[in-house]
Amino acid sequence: MSGKLENKVAVITGGNSGIGLATAKLFAEQGAKVVITGRRPDVVNRAAAAIGHGAIGIPGDVAKLTDLEKLYGTVHEKFGKIDILIANAAAYAVAPLASFTEEMFDQLSNINFKGTFFTVQKALPYLRDGASVVLTSSVVAEKGVPNHSIYSATKAAVRSLARSLSAELLDRKIRVNVLTPGPVDTPVFESIANTPEGVEAVKAAMSQFAPVKRIASAEELAEATLFLASDASAFMVGSELLIDGGIRSL
Ligand SMILES: NC(=O)c1ccc[n+]([C@@H]2O[C@H](COP(=O)([O-])OP(=O)(O)OC[C@H]3O[C@@H](n4cnc5c(N)ncnc54)[C@H](OP(=O)(O)O)[C@@H]3O)[C@@H](O)[C@H]2O)c1
Image (cartoon, rainbow, N blue to C red; front, side, top):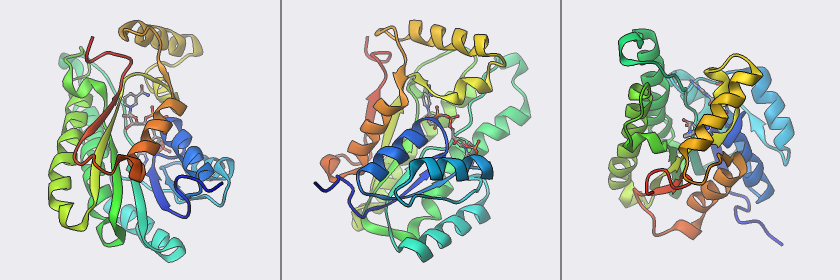
């Protein structure tokens, strides 16, 4: 039986961990030629091997325009045009208003906002007409959550980008949509808790935050991304798929 993404070329930023890695594995199983990127070469290479199905890893930083140009040049050389682009890479940092540093502000802005914008812009010459682009936002983009001001603002910017970029790319039939996760079980929590117990405590708190009283698995988000990436979502343009355990609505 053929897969839902047979022979499609898919580039996934942040494909070496969490939601990006689960998505890369699912896409590869569904027949896609998968390319992942992330900053840590060893982790990128190990992840590409774990994904299998001929997936390749190209280390790079989405906040560096030269890395993006190198990434797309290599993808084009190896696979030709890109059918699916998943702009998933992001940094997460939280702190109260009074102690949020300029360094944290710049890091979140450069990776989450600037990085996402140029991930799409630099792909333009290599995207096939009719391609599907998925940007990853977060449920906190439309909620006021203490300590999350800048992270949330960058994710609101990402939500906005999908509308504007879809409008600009309509003539090429390129759809830009947003995946909006609530809390998901990924290594991201290790960036704000230093011990295994601390990570578990953060996950438990996140579970309480969601009306369904649990956090999602990365695989659940991968399935949602597959829908957005495939023609099954052909009538979604500049839109959003909310997978948040009821946080926004209940
Ligand atoms: N987990 C959640 O609860 C949750 C909730 C809402 C939204 N999200 C969003 O979902 C997406 C995936 O998050 P996740 O939970 O799967 O996190 P994760 O496991 O920490 O993965 C983040 C990925 O992004 C990559 N990355 C970070 N900065 C990068 C940069 N400058 N250039 C290239 N790659 C970079 C990381 O690789 P390197 O470190 O090797 O660069 C890593 O592969 C993010 O956009 C996140 O904001 C997550």
